[in-house]
Amino acid sequence: MAQKKPYRGRRGQKRATPGAPTSVVVDTIGARGDGIATRPDGGERLYIPGVLPGERVTVRPGEPRGDGRAARLEAVEAAAPERVEPPCPHFGRCGGCALQHMAPEALAAWKRDLVVQALARRGFGPEQTGGVAATLSLPAGTRRRATFAVKGQGGGAVLGFNARASHAVVPIEGCLLPTEPLWALVAPLRGLIRALPLPRKGGDCAVTLTDTGADVVLDLGAEPDLETRERLAAFAAEHDLARLSLRIDGGPPEPAAARRLPEVRLGGRLVALPAGGFLQPSREGEAALVDHVLRAVETAPRGPVADLFGGIGTFALPLHAAGRVVHLAEGAAEAVGAVSALGLDGLTAEHRDLFERPLGAKELKRFAAVVFDPPRAGAQAQAAELAAHGPGVVVAVSCNPATFARDARLLVDGGYAMESVLPVDQFPWAAHVEVVAVFRR
Image 1 (tube, rainbow, N blue to C red):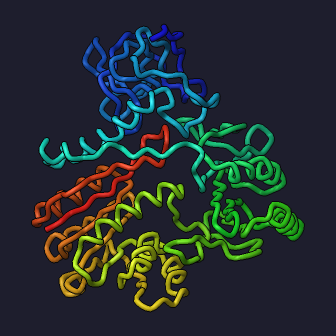
Image 2 (image 1 turned 135 degrees about the vertical axis):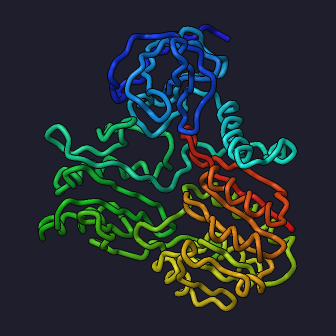
Image 3 (image 1 turned 180 degrees about the horizontal axis):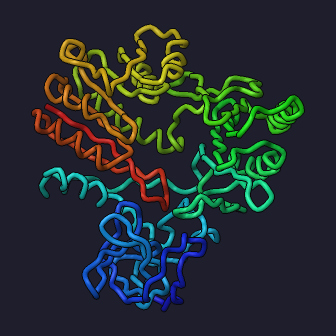
């Protein structure tokens, strides 16, 4: 491999209280994507962005972080074979990506290892963690939703992404992650926010591409006046948005220009997406997860299926289209309303807080299979009920390996075998990975 130029640190990184430069060897990459090394003069842990395992680097220790210190990378003395040139010119200033300097094969292996290590910490042995499949990695340029940071900054308005460990917003002139139609809205949105009352501490601009047009939710710091509302309506019309909603001072999204209903096709049906509602980041990732869930449920006896934390029916609607009777339970009332509005025979939707009121023995006994896809907090209470009373097949979908492993431990201790675990990476270069796993009694 050709000799690489020394890596001189990440511009825009939050400056820590400086210490004396020190040379260390990186042991591993932590769950946030930072390298972890041990300081030779005292054994203190250092957390270093922009490095790879095995590299010898010069760093400057800074502020305390957890059980060690954050450290700023000064130079790479000896690069790892897996180091590549980051493809984005914003890498190092923008905090959106942490691992563009890692070769794709190494990144996929590292994301699989996040799942393996999470399971190992919950007592799963090599015979179980060895069955974790290779990561299914989705390419960049497929994201249909993105949340940009907006802020009045330096006498103007800025739209971009937060700098690493900072509230500062980095203006982004190009990004490899979104689809082209999504990215095409960024420059117009940047022009729009210059005339808007943005939140004093900054806010978000969330853009989601649906099958009927773009859905935009924008944070404002004050109620817009009539002139501003007219400007927003004109913007929505000019750029053919399906809907433009405002969130004032952290309140719920309220439509400012609703030109048509934003809808997404799931299981062959168009279902309304609530403003700010959850949708899988990419169509390709959604298809991979749905395919895995459908194939697992096909092996269950004929009978009703429960889709818990079901959102707007990402899994429920394809399961229904495959001929299953499905009951969806979800804590967001707007999502439940969107599914109920379809009026489909054999598909019911219940507004229910599954953290406080998980399905219990009497309710679970009628299902042939259960699918659950909770937020990052996981589904501890529901997993405990499934462990005690669940059906023969349970499919777990998770965006957090740590809480997935905790819930998996409950299921296995309750008599399930962990049949398969597939890491799915819809977040290229970020320190995130999703999991879909099948459990069988």
